[in-house]
Structures are given as C-alpha cells and as structure tokens.
Image (tube, rainbow over all chains, first blue to last red; front, top):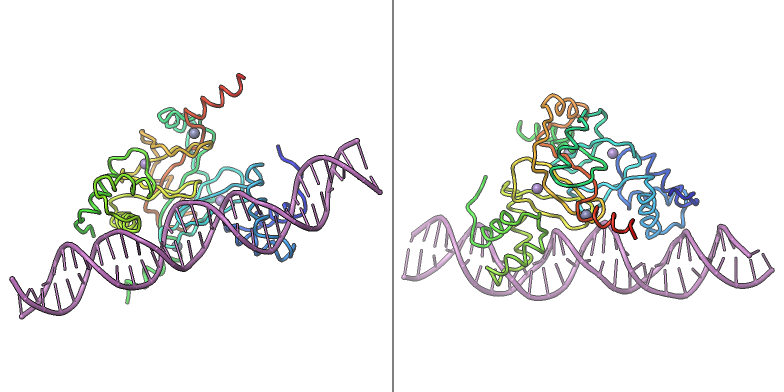
Length: 136
Length: 136
DNA sequence: AATAAAAGTGAGAATGATTATCATTATTAG
DNA sequence: CTAATAATGATAATCATTCTCACTTTTATT
Ligand SMILES: [Mn+2]
Ligand SMILES: [Mn+2]
Ligand SMILES: [Zn+2]
Ligand SMILES: [Zn+2]
C-alpha cells in the first residue's frame, strides 16, 4: 500500500504536514521549491495525488475552486468561513455515536467508511470586520 | 432580500427544485433549454449565483471539479460515494445537540450559522460492483 | 404614449486550476 | 555495465467558470 517515498515526494509530504493551513497545490509548489528548486508543478500535482492515494494526506474541497490538502489524517472536523472561505480545523472531538452514523448511512444505502462535520459561519477576522462596518 | 424572479430565473429555480440529484450548472442549462430554448449558459451561471445569494437554493461542492446545486434548502446532511462521487441526501435527521455544536464552534472562534454532516463510503451501486469483482 | 434610465441577456473570449503528453533523466534489476 | 522501468518537468490541452460588451427588455418618469 504505502510505497517508500523519493526525495521529491518526501519534501511535499513534509511541507503538507508542517503547514497548519490546508495548503493548495500552488502553495505546496512554492514552499517545496525552496528546498527542491527544480521541481515542476506537474510533479507536485502528481505527488499530491499519489500521497492521497496512499493515505498519507487528505484532499479537501469546499466552495472556492482550488482544492486543499490536509496532512492531519486522523479523523477531524472543519469550520468554514462563509465570508472569506477560510478552512479551519475543529480542535475538539464531536461525539457522534456509531449508532447515529450507522442509522443515517443505512438510510442512504452507503457502506459507511468515514464522516466529517462541517461548521459554517463567520471566522473571527470576518466577524470583526462585520462589526466595524456596522459601527460606521 | 428575495426579489421577485423573472421567467428565466423562475425556470432555473423550478428545474433545481424538481431535480432530486443535485444538478450541475451544465445539467441545469440543458434541462432549462427545453423550456426556454434561447437561454445562454452565462445566464444560467448568473441566475444560479443570484438564487444562492437570495437563499432560494444552496451550492454544494465535494471532490469532483464541478459544483452542484441543491433546491432543498432546509438543513440536511449528505452521503458521498468515495468511488464514483455520487452525492446523496441523508433522509433522516442526525440529532446533534446545540451544545455540541456551540462547543465546537467556540473552539474555532467562528460565529456558527449552520452545519452539515458528510458521510463517506461506497454507494449501493459501487458496493455491488466491488462484490462482483471479488467473485471473478 | 413617449422617453430615458436601469436591469437582464447571450455569444464568445478570457481565465485559471488541473491534467495529459512526451522527450529526457534518474533509478532499479539482472 | 546494460537494459528495462519509473519519475520528471516543460509545455500544451482541457474544461468549468467568469468576464466583456453590444444589444434587448423592463421599469420608472414625464
Ligand atoms: Mn484539517
Ligand atoms: Mn441535498
Ligand atoms: Zn472569514
Ligand atoms: Zn458510487
């Protein structure tokens, strides 16, 4: 399943793991170029896909048109800003019982393998901006 | 907030509401053309955005690269096939307490306005295919 | 009704993220 | 060392979405 990684793939993986902000392919590319200056964008895309395939990382997509990568593979949830699109980790566990999940899965007919809760709302920065607008 | 809709917008809204499969912009375009033959794709995109803005419909995005529209605006959850990408409604309610949600939201700092649970797994069709493959 | 301003429209061009191609360069196996 | 194999990166192609803009339709004003 998990093949051993070459230097480029390892550099990409290190970068995604080190980042705490769910980087895009382009952000990964820029950061990785610092340490592997000749790497191409196509390789970054190829490597990201293979890392996802091998379950080293996860792919996330929400409203904006670029997909983001998550080096945090243990199951966790996300909060998404409805204003600026910021994608934040939820640092606490939301206790959904297996029964609840199984029941919902049964109702759709899918063979449940995982789940993710998405919270939507204004992030702190956008919340602040909103307040200032209302004061003027 | 909700302005009254002209004939094109109404046709688009009717189509999204009638569809039970979270159609893409292109699918909406094809279906709407049947009744409003001269409508352009750009108008469909423009109208879909304005319907989202006015909260008549919702925009959904997951792993594939096209975004989908949901005429079902009341809060509900989705099941996503990890094999073929099918996006299904979860027809039952998953009882998350407001406390659980609030606590998670507090932990991220966002001003919670909504949430969505996503269940991942193999859809019935893909599950079936998998079984047949293993039998050969 | 006549006229002027405003809003909506659709064809087509432009954009931008992602993917495909392919000749070249590492890496591995024998 | 040599042949087979895998990885690479520059570049072109793809394709969903957005932008542009001249034109039409609707709405407001006289
Ligand atoms: Mn995350
Ligand atoms: Mn739905
Ligand atoms: Zn924000
Ligand atoms: Zn499926």
